[in-house]
Length: 333
Ligand SMILES: *Cc1c(COP(=O)(O)O)cnc(C)c1O
Image (cartoon, rainbow, N blue to C red; front, side, top):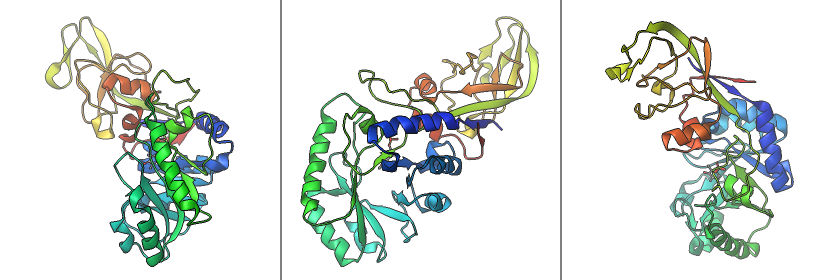
């Protein structure tokens, strides 16, 4: 199997950068959904908690169960709803409210323009009534931005919508936490006055902001390595892999390494070879569990910056890391 190293120092560096923006680490909720963006849920949760992070966000209660003991509050974004200690649930729609068990701590997601999940602003009062009627405990109100990473006024338009929400709520509820910022929103903001930022990708070391924004110094947490399986000399004009799509121009030493699309590595387009972080092109097609490189080293680093790797495949850092199989061994370095 390939293996992953997680760089604790880089992770803490990123969290410190974000804390400079929020003013306090108490205001950071680390987003750990989808196996911590493929980094490894439990290891990242433990590191975050050791750093002093008190809030987490996960995809569903299976993820919450593995980590909620480490945090004051774990926000569960969806899935089956059972009231769990130290957890809150995001309400994604009005219809859902009637089916949530009594006493559940909930955070109301309001749709301020992304039109993905959340209740309409016009349904706000009705949803507060329903929350009362079904005896749920409202502990937060939240929204999500559709284009905080793009240089445009869209973010401000959505923030204006969310301001309306806050105004409506002020008279109705006390003691709830208010949060709308994701990584992109906090990275580009000059001031922060909410209770929490839900930070995902920036904590893992990437900013997908347009280049025109000031660059923030973030450091990738994850590096992906593969181990050598076997080596051979490829004679001039011999071919490698399925379809024989790579042809040696001269005699060369090649080795197979134990990483493939079965591990969540992108198969990509073999006619545009992926170049590893050490400058080695993948020769021919990616197999399910193997790739071939011109190298005889026992261990090679395949990717040390998922954002750079993503550019080669025409995707984003999120997809590169999230796809990585849970079965890959992860260690903290
Ligand atoms: C994934 C997610 C985030 C984190 O987004 P990043 O861009 O990775 O910071 C925040 N809030 C919600 C609701 C999310 O689903």
